Length: 282
Image (cartoon, rainbow, N blue to C red; front, side):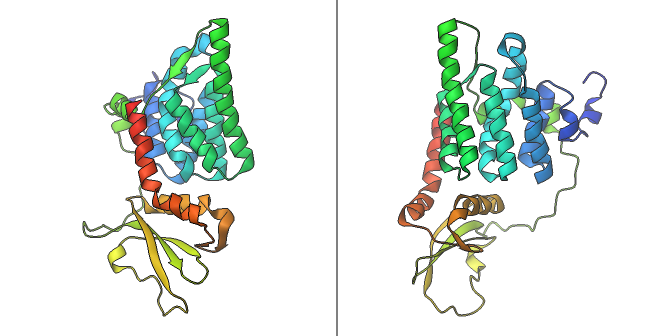
């Protein structure tokens, strides 16, 4: 970055950032993962894989530690991404453990949960292979008594580390879409509406549950809202549930869910808070 001013660097797109390296570029990529457009996020994910490809702890310990601060954000982003982006994120997991870096058990648990919830069989196998390789690396390093890098960053620790960096503080150089202002009295949520005859469930979203008209006319069946999940990011959350249950989709937003699926939905927030709490403790 020596040939670039910080101002010029902050105008770079993720594809261009991959040709530089250091804490500032990695922090900028994290910024794109958090706030970028879908195209930005795709390129940011691929940039992390690009940096990790071919590294080894014997020659690149500092580089691996620097790149690995993006790991909590890749894990967080995974369920919300397209199949192609999830494949790219999985490649980053795999490239990281192939360096003989050792992932903390809490991180392994989070990746294992991603594998459990992944519907694509090829990607599920790749996620489990990354976990398996991590276990093999621990055995190999213990046996050979060779050098290893231990990765145990949490999202909170990373934010504390990068929040004052210019690359992270500086706004992204694109014009975001205008959003309708949300009142404090509005209830943004993803809702789960069940019709009573067959038990089919509609998974939808609304910017205000108080004023939501679920159907513009009288429906020929009885129905009720069985659960809601409030969120400031209802688009991504709705997309997550549509992808999670896509194999049970009947038509559009209607799904044929069983009792266990509904229980999982109703305990989703509790399980998410538990994982976050355990990650912080770890």
